[in-house]
Image 1 (cartoon, rainbow, N blue to C red):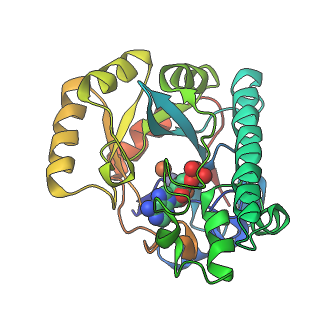
Image 2 (tube, rainbow, N blue to C red):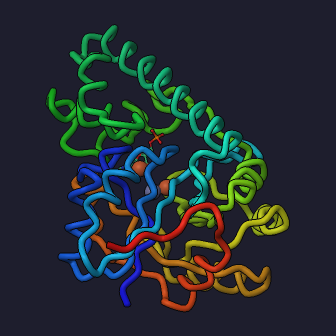
Length: 280
Ligand code: AMP
Ligand code: FE
Ligand code: FE
Ligand code: ZN
């Protein structure tokens, strides 16, 4: 049983539409796929309607969070998308993303790069993110690829054209997810190449707030990080997951490059009550 619990579609900063993603996932041999676009459930319906036989869909989202000034990502699974408190918080995050992407684009435009907010909006089909601004920079020949834009000269964090976006306090976010019947998993907790990461005491606070698991097997974790996170999960009674964090051609990872064990997947589903897993 092949389970991949973290992927992105064109509903955020992936390049594969949600209906194509579920077909590609089955073709790649997956049995379970979670769709976890940034701060949105907008891709859920298209994915559900296109579900191929043999694939189970776990509907989720990856929420932009912060703790002690450190950005972190929270995977939320099987929540009720109509629950007003969580839905309202996600809407605010998306609105903030739109405002900051416009600011980044206008600053780039003002400096004569040729980037326009109109073009960035065209490139974004859902939740707008820095990868869409990066695509605009690639088209104009300023950078060769997406990582080339995530540098201090361009839109890397704290970089020349970078603008902060709103983020939810992660303890509040966990409570909102749990309150909407969902299950929360800390995404790539030790992805240090993206910036500072939180220490174990923060993870303990998250567990106390209702966190269910840690994403251990992830492309941004080395063997030492995985061992440390596995130990921490055992200590705190958290389940562990693995996933690709697939972003289509915006990232070099393949579907199911990392996977979650069937036992952990069953535990995760058993803890959720906000929306069911779907199978064709
Ligand atoms: P944003 O959420 O708009 O701030 O943009 C962050 C997103 O950009 C992440 O979800 C990744 O998909 C992508 N990303 C972050 N860092 C990098 C990087 N160094 N190289 C390529 N993509 C990145
Ligand atoms: Fe992303
Ligand atoms: Fe993430
Ligand atoms: Zn992700």
